[in-house]
Image (cartoon, helix red, strand yellow):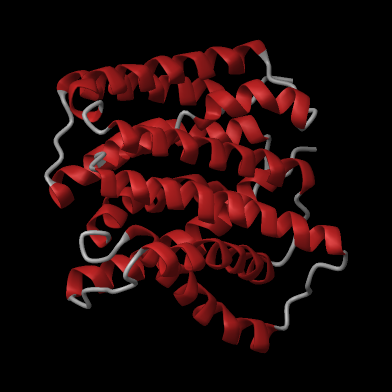
Length: 293
């Protein structure tokens, strides 16, 4: 007998996509008032300040084995330090919010290629078709902006490193991750992120901030919307479904990020880019479709 999904799991992809897509524009807005690694370190410290009373009040069950602590910390370092750190460096180097999103959201292709060997998950031919269409759509968007984005080569290279970080973190979570209480797992992973970014920020940046309304609003959005809500939904979806299907949702992030960056940052997407969005959306529809039994 088929079992219905809980409402939060049904709504999770939509909420995640909106929060995650908006994070690119908001992050680029935030680093106009702070250096990238300093901004990230402050973000992670703020998350931990919010999680600390929840740990005391809720007393969630903690990981029992040293390996579980280690795997949580590794995923936290790969996503929070490598992925976000290099993404913020790309913003600082001048890459647009949509450009960063386009490159790092090629993650589903890498996940689709590596997942069968790393997680034992089988990817069906229909899913491969969806992944291929998604890649074609992403490539179309990149082509539409190539004359702009290729001016910032170091930023593009930082995006490639960020792509490697989130791909590895996704696969590691799927292979070694256990179902932990979200407060406990988030605390461990953001502590790992803080441990990775704070020393670098103190060593190479001034660790100063412009405490104005845009900066505070950006920090609040990234702390609550991205770091707590979106990341919790992402990890929950990874554990609840096949990793290649969940990762295919990232194909919708670039066009949504580009759409949000238009009013926030004034970064317009060429018409060819929107054609790429339509193609990528078709790929997502195919990739996330459950095969008939």
